[in-house]
Image (cartoon, rainbow, N blue to C red):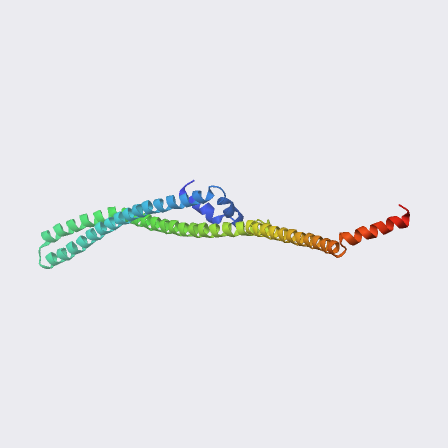
Length: 218
């Protein structure tokens, strides 16, 4: 399959197939095909120019023979009018040779003109295929990028590392606050016990204890 046949296949591909074409090394493959197509186009352009130049040369040769024949015919007429029949015959013989040469070139002129026309039409077709392929290539790259973004959203494939780090710091701060609050509460309880001990000192407690012992007969 030639480069332009492969390009035609790419251009006619459905969207999903075009997307698949870019998976893995498909991107590089499509790009390489375009590079090769452009090279082949440049080569074909030179070949078409050569065919057109050949057709032009044949046409010029044909036109020259016809022009010479017409000129010889006029000269022959002038010689005949002047009464020089021998001179007129020679000129008519030369005219005949020119027209014979032109007739022999006629088929070549038609052949190369036809080849040049078809080659030029094919070259334009190749150029159009390359443009279409380039458009598909650019659109496919965009579609693949968009598809990957959509897939990331649908799969929840977000990068939440920053949020996770934020939550960890928040959790540490909350734990630290709760710890400090617990320590404060413990310190508050300790202060209350000290106040009670101070309020109900050891001396009064000892007297009350002795009174209680007596009451119980201890």
